[in-house]
Length: 117
Image (cartoon, rainbow, N blue to C red; front, top):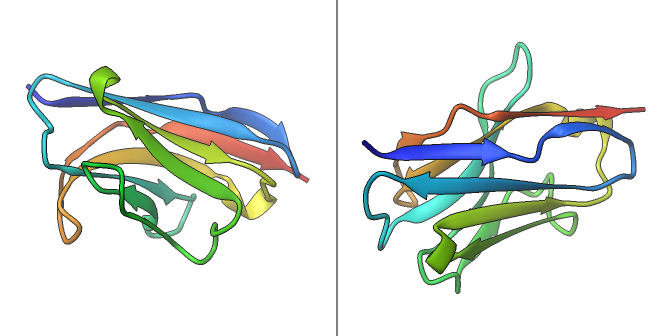
């Protein structure tokens, strides 16, 4: 059973930093694109960042460019999201996903990030 488990969320003041982790298990994810999405209360889920299997290609929403960095460690089956200069509008549940650039098949349960002003 494929499983994605996120961790690293928490409460931080505006301007602070957090690093999220997502560990993949239960099947091989070779060749899969890995991504982070987020969902704030009352809002639709939105794309944050994605990284190709080989780590050579990344994409970010304009909302986080220059502040967030996605990376991966294939031997550890783990992806990361380093979040700097956090803003209150970054408050959301952050979810890890695996699939293709067009469609993500596997999803984690999410980790809460709260940024206070």
